[in-house]
Amino acid sequence: MHEPHAEPRRSIYYRYQVHAPWLASKHPPQDRKKVVIVGAGPIGLFAALELARLGVPCVLLESELQVSEGSRAIVFTRRSMEILQQVGVDAPITANGLPWRFGNSFYRGQRVYRMEAPHDPDDRFFPMINLQQQYLEQYLTEAVLAHPLIDMRWGNRVTRVDPKDSFVRVEVDTPEGSYLLESDWLVASDGARSGIRAMMDLKLEGASYEGRFVIADIRIDLPLPTERLAFFDPDWNPGNTILMHREPHGIWRVDYQLPADETPEQALAPESLKARIDAQLAMIGHGGTPWAMDWCSVYSARALTLPDYVQGRVLFTGDAAHMLPIFGVRGANTGWQDAQCMAWRLAFVVRGVAPESLLQSYSSERVAAAWEIIDEAGKSTRFMTPPTRGFRLLRDAVLSLSLSQPFVGPLYHWRTSRPHEYTQSPLNSAGDDNLLFKVGPGHGAPPQNIRLGADDYLLDHLGGGFDLLYFTEGPAIPDALQKVVAEIRLKGVPLRVVAVGAAEPVAGADLILADADGHFRARYGVRASGAAYLLRPDQHICARWMSLDAGRLQSALTTALGGTASTTVSVQKGV
Image (tube, rainbow, N blue to C red; front, top):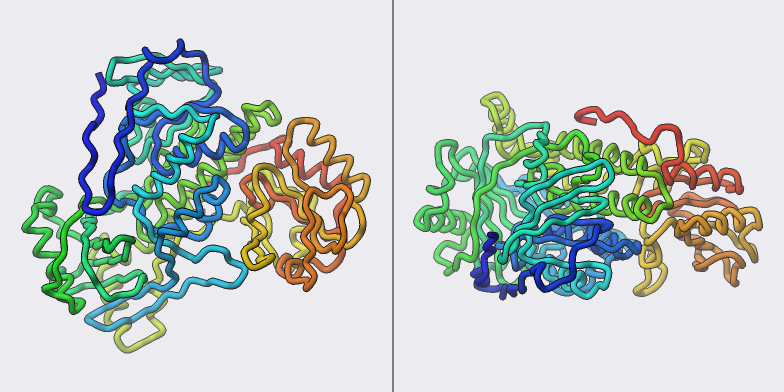
């Protein structure tokens, strides 16, 4: 019988809420569900909200009764905020988080590199924002509990998975005993130690690094800005690396590498934690400043992925699908891209407007993204935690040169997580004008946001289906295009037509954006009326035209819905 932790977790700044467990005896007999999601961390919660936004009901199973312990993921990227905006949780994150865009690397008391993340007036969100994971999960949970299409079940732990050809049967343990639950589709978002992955005997591919790090969240008053701080080879921890981040509510994250022969139990002993944190504070000139511990843990840097995220009727997403080094804020930020990429496809399959084969393009796109991230994260990890004597010699040479040679500084760049561009996606149109554009987002890229007013941006108006950006100054969308739009809508496919550039109402358009100064058209590389961009429901570009006609629009939509002969692409490690 499952016994989840029933007392609120301890914290000096966050008040945990314990939810009542969902018990089968208090509900009607279980019918087969459309979708069951296992794991209510940041990725599972978002996946449930995204499916619900697309009209698909789901059951969300969480083994615990409260949000996760400790700050865990704390840095969220601009693209993650754009994704979270789609399910309405960007506002509380913006209101309570700490935005930033600079990172600093130090060696022997000298700043040897300063990273500046790009930011321009067309960006609603800062490049990065810091907020503890408990708050993020709280905001997502509040949205989940308010949505009528999501059945949230606290204290429900999956103990057995039995995949069938057309459904999945799971056994779920609760505080009063077990029950069986069947679902057409099962989404595994149950984290790095995924029980679903283990039950299905699936193996991750990639590399594990020897270095281990302590994460320690302390409350302390430091007169330092919200910027990433990295310290290499300090006297108190020779050969190793220390990271520091400011968090809301007077909390600072301190990450430091451990000697190779030290166990996690030794590292988390109170006397060890105190000695090392005191040494770090003394090194930055704040020795003796009082501090209090909130939470601490030990982690290892791993770079691993499943070779296929679609296993019959079971789909893997987030850390259940891959384990990535946290350097470069890749964990949750990558997971939300997974879930967004997966959810619209699964919703369309469940609603019967796309074939099941469409899901294979989710796997090919995100596995390719994982290998790209593993390649980049590996470079950062090898610099911060050299795995061999040769790598350490090279890293130490860079450290030494950086004291006098500024050109070495960029080698410290931590290769921040960025949105993957699905340039080789099978959903991209082969018959468009992608190669003719000089600027603007190309095949597989996320859209470039455009500031439309004081508090009005392009991405505020997109999402929830396909979006056709049609650039015109005319009074109407051409009849032939309107006919294609009407036909695709009759099939149940959501498609919004946005007329860009017109000063007056445009017949056949669902939304009009005037673009009086031509800024929108310039950023998207549009020179004349009749040009267009087609965005998938996850907002990535799947086609763009200098001049759009009905035949090419129909072809692009067919391809984007998985209607081509081949819906998979080969994935090579490191690509």
